[in-house]
Length: 247
Image 1 (spheres, helix red, strand yellow):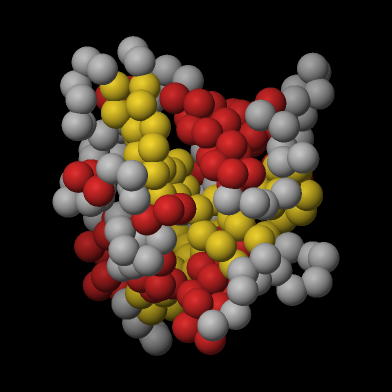
Image 2 (cartoon, rainbow, N blue to C red; image 1 turned 45 degrees about the horizontal axis):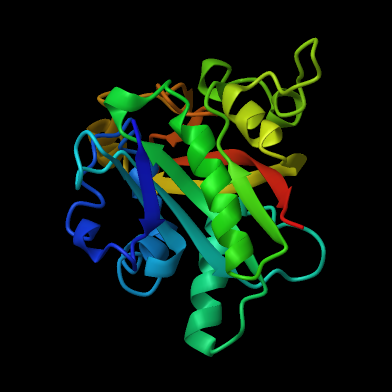
């Protein structure tokens, strides 16, 4: 497989199919209301920050995509609101005419039938290179550990820093980032917040959501907080801030 990876600006023919690629994201994750501040503009405003990949076996068919957003980093600390925070910051900076001074990864998505073949590592490396070409000295990433859903009740502060005997992170996706040169910095305790009515959560998950209290949802990193009398449930997802120095 010979990959060709470019920006969406360089290959605008991928615009129409960018979101059609078969993926493994759970429906509730796609309903974070902050997402529309980026994804609605990804193919126009942020085309230079979207990477697209295809290969020589099926030219023109997406293999993977990766998205980044420039944002304003206030002070030295990375924000506790992680993924939501950098999208909000980036969008507000653009609307207010402020110069962004940092860049954050938002996602790397590999086509379902090609997962497990090392393409995510390739996309991390290319994302790092592209951020450096854009003039940044650091790429940060609010990483969603891909095995955390197997332990929804384990605090992220414990899970994120768990290591194997060789010193690398226990979690496979965190391990990819560290092997690429990243350093785990801290937990973003409220990186993604997804509120919804009970009817919406039932539609997203197929679960009854008929009892007040924590609900374990397949694919969720923590339990969803369900409040039956008030007809809503809220998912607060922690992520893990990883810093990739580029110089």
